[in-house]
Length: 169
Image 1 (cartoon, rainbow, N blue to C red):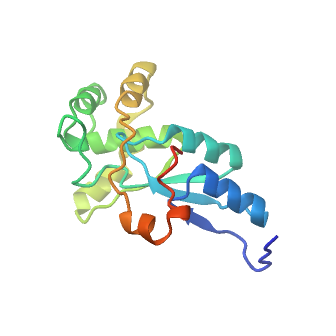
Image 2: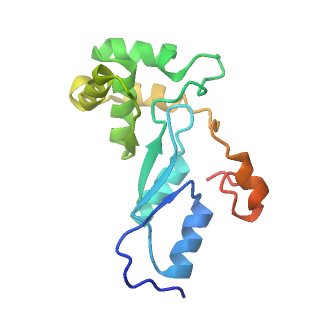
């Protein structure tokens, strides 16, 4: 078993459950964070539950979706009709709703913006939306298409045995 006595905490990126389990069993260490693609169109509920059970914080990158993140309807996440419907009920923005949903699921987020007003809006998301009810949750869960938008094809060619996206979670 590999031991690194000077390591206190470490994080992983793009690890699936099999890779996380392997690193835990082979090293005896558990990462504190696993950063993965996670947004309303790719919610990764199985990986989230696995991470919670192991004490690993799941962190979403692209939690609001980047421009390439579009649903089966061809619309960008922030233009989704279901999200717009829920935001009218809460008098908040779609971005604020999505960040609140991630928060209530226990997913840490790192939304990206260069615009000061959007950064401020993101910080206000928890207060702006308030708690989501069962109807909101059902609608939000229903948006999950389980579709990756960031595939890192070069990794599959360079190291297919370590390609994390071949497994469901």
